Length: 71
Image (tube, rainbow, N blue to C red; front, side, top):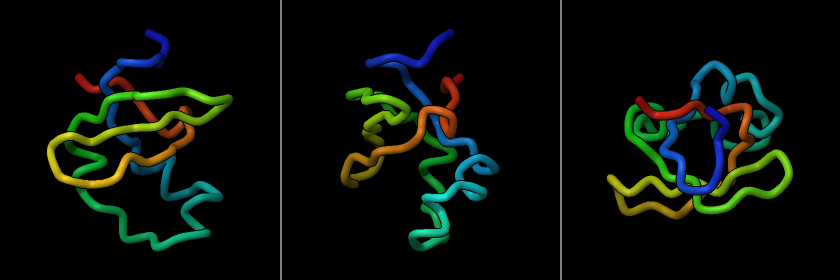
């Protein structure tokens, strides 16, 4: 299934940790992005705006390639 607006996703740890974005910020990623479901709110080019509703955190932009459907 293609990732689109409204899809529930989680972050793939291996893809995020080896990304350019990871080298530009703190690499201590919060565990909830890998374990809980996030919802795609918007998509622009190769990036998706993801909202993780389990905890009160800001929405974040991530590469679509770093996400997989939450099962």
